[in-house]
Amino acid sequence: MNVAQLLARAARVYPTRPALFSGTRLLSNYGQLSTRVARMARCLRDEAGLAPGDRVALYMANSPAYLELIYAIWWAGLVVVPINAKLHPKEALFILDDSESSLLFVAEDNADAELGNAPSVKRVLRAGGSDYAAMQAAEPLPLTDREPDDLAWLFYTSGTTGRPKGVMETHRMLLAMTACYFTDVDGVDAHDTMLYAAPISHGAGLYNIPFMVRAAKHVVPESGGFDPAELAALAKHYGHVTLFAAPTMVKRLVDHQAETGADSSGFKTIIYGGGPMYLEDIKRALDVMGQCFAQIYGQGESPMTITALSREHLSDSKHPRWEQRIASVGVAQSLVEVRIAAADGTPLPTGEPGEILVRGDPVMSGYWRNAEATARTVRDGWLWTGDVGALDADGFLTLMDRSKDVIISGGSNIYPREVEEVLLKHPAIAEVSVIGRRHDEWGEEVVAFIVRQPGATVEQSDLDNFCLDHIARFKRPRVYRLIDALPKNNYGKVLKTELREILKRDG
Image (cartoon, rainbow, N blue to C red; front, side, top):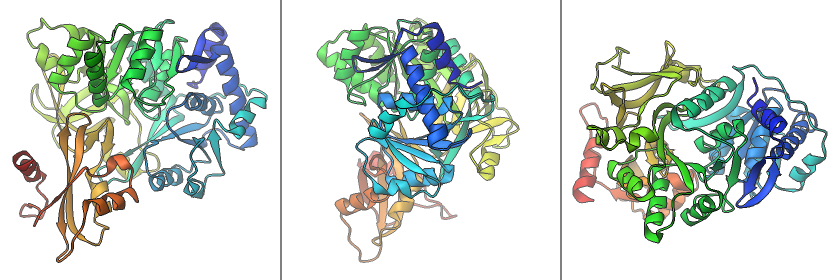
């Protein structure tokens, strides 16, 4: 079944219901949205010469066109390759090349000439430009049939080596994720509004599907991003608003509501995930904004679907283990099994920490053209998440650590080795080790410990500019600490625990 069938169904049953908005401005109802999508799908198939299964990349920030394009790509039987709009063009080029994307859509104001250099890319189109508008002159394409295990969404997530891997998300996975949303996260009805404040290229975009099922409203803020005052105004305007946000976003929104005394009743549900939510932060959020929160824990490899902490559990403050529960990431979602295992795969008893394993229909079958990484990550049907956690007697999962040393800043994953490899290209640097440090606004920030080459000098501004030439701005270190030697064990491995102790001691 093609996921785009959900839009086709909504358009048949509820053609006049409002569908897509920019801020408070209505752009299309469901009938009009379906027709626009079908016309664009015709152009993708006939004019661009693409065949079912071909990949189409989207390298752009949030906009109404993003949602239109997702469904046009699916409608044509093609595969969406969402690229984080914050990535450096060189990083985006790797994804284009690895995925062999045939077509690339960029923002109307994106003028980077490098983007057309990927060998497979036949054409670069600007969403919202004249070519985009001309697509509406085409004859609508009938919905393309797809099998449940056909690829729908190719999501690139970095591994411990920093080399991006393409997670193969099928139509079956996305439909299973949608079923889990209704069962484990929240209900949706026609009065509800999905507000896209977090990147549509990630989990917030996948959560469009439950709202498409119910023919509810989809609203992209005019800013295209996260602005607490704008979100508060939109929630007041629409009511029944749902949004997905990283914990850092939640904290900023809560601060805004507390400082301004704004009415929070327009927020129906705020789903948080993508990073650690500290206990005191969620307690304050509940105090300021009330019982409008739910949490999910997932990965690209099991999108939004490993565990969920429901509104019911977050609000049950009389439970004797309430604080432990709201500091957890909830219980296994309905269509998956979650297990804690030792390094050899042996299941561990209640309360004992180990690696978190998950299996079920929402879990990927593997990485795109990367059998070696797939074999390491998926074993006997179980996804090895690389995260360390423990299950209590009631099935609540608490995350203990991240075995891959990933740094989560503002909801985005940053892999230390990727940053280290860039810095080691600098002629003044002999050794480097990168770790994360807690940051009140962003969750964590990147700190680089640097050993200079003998006699070399280097300024932070020079290192900043060097990083910006190679990686995305959000990945660069916020702090550079010069050190005479990195602490190491007898095998030469850098002891990051000692570096963390240095930060605790010296700040």
